[in-house]
Image 1 (tube, rainbow, N blue to C red):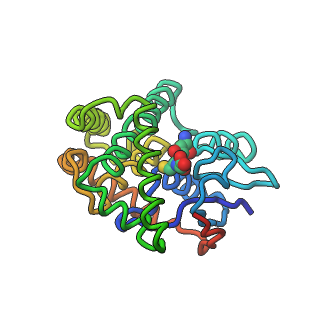
Image 2 (image 1 turned 60 degrees about the horizontal axis):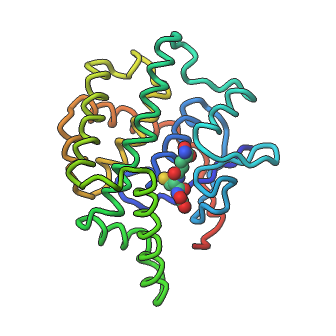
Length: 246
Ligand SMILES: N[C@@H](CCC(=O)N[C@@H](CS)C(=O)NCC(=O)O)C(=O)O
């Protein structure tokens, strides 16, 4: 049985606070890959120091995309099986935009935007005893803001970051149009990836111009509902809590 290691579902309104954990779990559910969820709170336990990762046949594989490549190679899992070469290329570009750009706008909205920081601190670190409750959130925030800066997004003003995010959302909305899914009647990896990101933007009660922009696209909101129903309907076995080490 494959073990899927993801963060615990701590943030109300989203299946998981990490879009990459939602993405991999949803893909595995939709593809019908039997797996057991193990909750991790320490990304350092993963082979790449991040979540999600899987354990399969004694091997640990990190990174949602690399895991999906592995599952395709080993088990023939491919939600994009019916796409043409051109659609696959379009899906590839869409996924990279969502995972490598829009993600960082969410990071900004949670970790750098002063309006959301009190809520984020409470949700992720509220259970820590003093003095950890004072030290850990500050260290984590400093690290996330340093990562934002190193990646480049953190060098823009907040207005610029949210404006860039809004253009990505507008592109997604245009591409989806009035179709139920990005490439027609069946969900593919493009839908899974967009759902994982969108549910993390609009699900939690964290106000931001990014959330306002997403809520302004009716078709994206209907898509999020549609994918949320699919995600819930394909639920597998109860998760296990593996580690609570911070
Ligand atoms: N490219 C990776 C990104 C994974 C990622 O960034 N995970 C974040 C949570 S959203 C994480 O584990 N961060 C912990 C850290 O950087 O220490 C994937 O697709 O899995």
